[in-house]
Amino acid sequence: MKHLLIALIFPLVFGFAPANKVIGDVEWNTDYETVLKKAKKADKNILVYFTGSDWCGPCKMLKKDLFATAEFKEISENYELLYIDIPRNNDLLTEKQLKHNMDLMAKYNKKGVFPNLKILDSKGREKGALHGYSMNGEVQHHIKFLKKYMK
Image 1 (cartoon, one colour):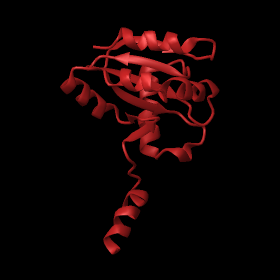
Image 2 (image 1 turned 180 degrees about the horizontal axis):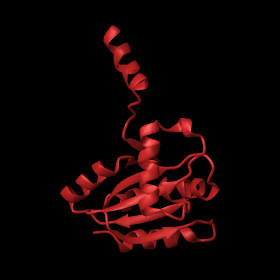
Image 3 (image 1 turned 120 degrees about the vertical axis):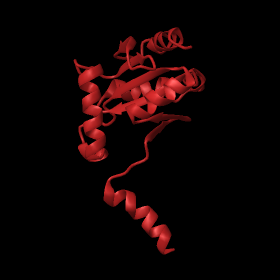
């Protein structure tokens, strides 16, 4: 029991968090370097999703309308997934994760547009981008975009 308690408290005290975010049945990694390594090894492109999880209405709609679907789950198997959250409530992330996410914002989302999807190759070079979302039939537009960059 003592070891279990230590195992549960240690990550909280030292700021470690699981390196993933689950949306629907799909797991997204939150570490850029890990995703790059996986993409190189698997010869896949990277799908980067920039979101403001606690404040961005279109991000919340995209999450429900696309990312939580069986169709996206199937598409996602062709990518390494990177979830970059920029919440207004900074308590949702560790200081280290927030810095990591802000550094990636400065590199890949300079205008701060949300939601923002970026397709990167396994070397981190941008291949495509799609930003914004509304409910007016855009799900199919997003699916078409994602299928375009599948390997």
